[in-house]
Structure formats: C-alpha cells, structure tokens
Amino acid sequence: MARSTPKPAPPKAAPAPLPRRRVALIIETSNEYARGLLHGIRSYIREHPHWDIDLDERRRGEATGWLRGWHGDGVIARIENAAIAAEVLESKLPCVDVSAARQVPGIPWVETDDTDIARLAFDHLAERGIRSFAFCSAREFNWSDWRRQRFEAICKEKGFALAIYPPADQKRALSHDEQLDALAAWIKALPRPLGVMAAYDILGRQVLAACKLADLTVPDEVAVIGVDNDELLCDLSDPPLTSVAPDTDRTGYLAAKLLDRMMAGEKVAPSAHLVKPLGVVPRLSTDTLAVADERIAQAVRYIREHACDGINVGDVLAHVAMSRRVFEAAFRKVLGRMPHEEIVRTRVQRVKDLLTQTDLPLFDVAMRTGFKHVEYMSVVFKKKTGLPPSEYRERRGAGRAKAEG
Image (cartoon, rainbow, N blue to C red; front, side):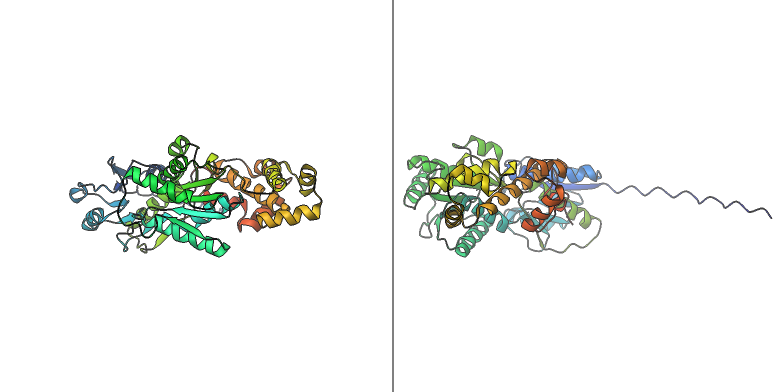
C-alpha cells in the first residue's frame, strides 16, 4: 500500500505588530548626565522602534506645563521637585523616575550607584598615596548627601578623617565670589597633600578655581576628582579634571525597558534600580604621587608605565636598585600592598578600561595588558572582580551595555 503524503503544516500567522506608544521624556537637555540618559533611551528605541517621543528643551527642574494636557502612554521623568511630581501624578500614566530627588516613592526609580561612585573616587586618590581627604558637597541635592555619606564611611573604614565643605555652621547662602573665597580658605587650612572629591564636575571646577586663588598647586598639593565625566567641562578646567563616569547610557536604557513593561500592563515594583558607574577617567587634576620616599615613587611610576608590558617584581627592582626585602617592606608600608599586587592591580584596571571602552576581542585585550593567554587573564580578572571578563563587559558595556530588567 502506498504511503500517504503528510499534509504540510499551515503557515504560521505573522505576529501582530506592536502598538505604537507615545512617550513623554521630562528630562533636561542642559547637562551631560541628562543627555547621557537620552542616549540610553535612544538605544532602546532603536531596538524597539514602536515609540513616538515628545521631548522639549528645558533646564534642570523646569516643569513642563504641557504634561497636564498631554495624551500619551507613559513618562520617563527627572522628577526634581514638587511641581514636576504633581504633573506626573495627575497624569496617572506609567512613569519611571530617573532623578535622585525621590519625590514620588511609589514608582520605579533608576539612578547611579553612589556607593560605587564614592569608592572609585576614594580608591583613585588613595592609590596615589594620598592620606588626607576632603569632600565638597552641594547640600541641595540628595545624591550629593549620599556621595558624601558613602565617602565619609569609606574614609572611616580605612582609618582616615574627612573634612567636609560647606561646614555645618555655614547657614546663609553665599554669592559666587564669597563661595570661592570661603572654599579657598577652607582648602588652605587642611593638611596636604590633600585629595578632594567634589560631588559633581561643576563643583570640581570651583575647587580648582579655589586652589588657584589660595596659591595651591594641583595636583601636587591638592588632587581633585569630580563626578559625571562631563568631557567639555572637565577638559576646559585648569588643569583638566579627573572624574568618575556614571553609566548614563545603561541607566536610560534600563528606564526605557522598565517603562515598556509597564505600558504593556506588567506590574513593576516601585523599587530602586542602581546602576554601577563605568569607572574613573583620569586627567591632570589627579596626576600625582604623594609618596615621600622617592625610590618608591619611582617604582610606582615604573609599574604604571610598564605593567602591561609583562614586567615582574624583578624588573622593578632592577629599576630602583634596592634589595627585594627592603623594597617590599617599604612599598607595603607606603601603599598598603606588595609590588606584585600593584602590578596585577594596574593590569586588571587596564583590562577593565579596554572591556568598557572598546569592542576589542578578549584575545587582543589579553595581549595589550601583558597576559600571554586569555584563560590566565580570565582567571586573574575573575579573582579580582568576581566576574569573568565577558560578563563584566556585558554588564558595563562596550559602547551601550544591555540593561537587565
């Protein structure tokens, strides 16, 4: 008997097109951080092209006015004050907050991880041998207080005192010139060499100007680090300002992803989603080595210049002409770690930079950082960071890091 030919399966119906969503972005365009958020949102839209965006040019904290009469599907907002909060709440639309002001606790909130920002800033200053620390804050912002609190806790944990500006007894607001004079007098009275973390880059520029007014050299007497890595502001500073770079691209991408889920009817918990920073972008304002022992300073400079050439402790010893026992004891006393640890730390930091700032294959990353094999680089990197290089890159991102929902 002839076998019957099976009937072909009916063709699958094409998936229904996603409904278009109209989304309001209540995000200022006047600073680098906010524009970074917009870049991240744009990245999400490129992958999910079913959004129509309404965005006006505005200053930070400026209410929209038009949101009350606006008809759309969702909002991503920097809810900086009560006026913006009222507009968002009255709209009764799904909303994700991307401000640290935390004016509306009942909605999802995406922000930078200030604990990690403070730790990166502290480690960057401490690695340069600095043992006197100060923090310059902006009291009107939650994130400034959080960064100060985290930085103060790290200093306390490491056994260092912290000077804080403005002092608690400064009650009235100061004019620009008064502020500069007060800041200069405050810095001049602190022990040096001094490391100052400014809550954000604009304040970092003020610290640099105050140092100039106080006739203090940067970075030899005072090293300064800001936050936000606003490249234009940092490069226009004198000297150029080192800064911690937040991952604003990923922050904006994650906010868009959460809002898309909410607009699709999914319930998203009103919890905080904290995004880790990308790292420190070093510039001349921290290009110093506050080490009294010139031989140890020379060794550290040699390590930083040649760690990725595959050097070992023997190569460093040949450069400084000290016995290994004396050298290692002095090195550990000054920096709190052994020379080999400093070589590995420097190489791992360079691996981090290449993973987050380039799309180089892991083989090329290993070759450029002094590791002969990708496998060995991966073992060392995971031991130091807790993550294999590929996962670190995925989380931090080469270009635009994919956000986790």
